[in-house]
Length: 319
Image (tube, rainbow, N blue to C red; front, top):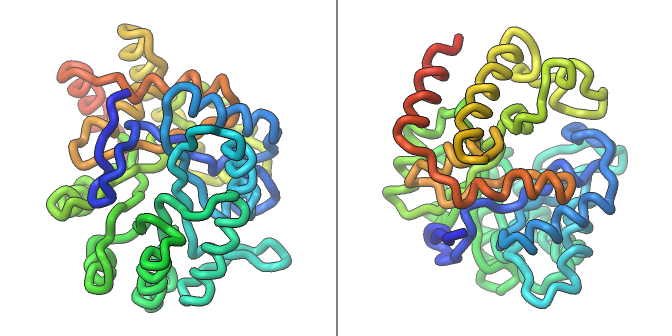
C-alpha cells in the first residue's frame, strides 16, 4: 500500500488502519457483542503482517480491554505499528460511561492508556468527543502539555466541528481530525473536510463501512437478530425502512467489486479514500479473516464510472 502523509503530523500512514472498537467486547453501552480474545489478537497481528502500519483504539473500547489487547499483540513485534488512542470518555464502578475534559482526567487517562498499551509514548492522542463543550479549552491545553512532555507525539480531535477546532487552534495546533464518514453519512463534506484540507489537518475517518452495514456480510435476517448486547440493534440504519434500501446499496457495491475481485466493504472504504482531504480510513476487524477481506481497500481505486453509479443510487435513496 502506498502511504499517505497524515496532515501536520508528518506521519506516513497506510490508507487503511485497523480499528479496535468491536474487539474490546465487554458489557458496556456501545459493545458489539461477545468477542474471543484469541480472534482479536489474531486480527491485530494479521493486519500488521499485511502491511497496515497504524492501529486506532480508545480507552473506552471494552472499558480498557481493547487497549490491553493491542498492548499484548504488539509487545513482541520488532517493528511496531503506530498506535492512536483517545481520551474524554470515562466510566465509573458501575461501568456507566460519562464525559470529562478536565485537565486531571485527561492526564490520568493518558497514563492509564500508556500502561495498558505498554508503550512509553502514544503516537497520536485524540480527544474522543468534545464534551463538555465548555471544557474544550482546558482539555486541549492539557493535551498540549502531554505533547510537550513527550508522553504523546501528536495530538488530534475526533467528532469536532470546525468552530470547536478553531477554538482549540488558539491554544495549540490541531494536527488531526477523526470524523465519521461513509457514503451513507456525508455531512462532513460540506464544511469540515474543506476546512481540514485548507488548514493541513490530517483526516482519518471512522465507520467507512457504516459499522458493518456495508461489508457485504450483513443481511436483513442478521440485522434483525442482532443480540441485545450489540449497540447496532438500536441504530436506525439497521432498522426498517432504511435497512432494506441499505442492503440494496450493498448489492450494488458487490456488483462493482466483482468486476475487480473486491468485496463490497473494500468498495465502501475505497469510496471514502477517493476524497483528497482524507488521509486514511479506519477498518474494523474482529478476526484475521475479516482483516484479510478488507485490507485490499488500501490499494483499490474506484473509476469515474463506478463513482457515478454509486452517486446515482445514493441520490435516489430516501432521506
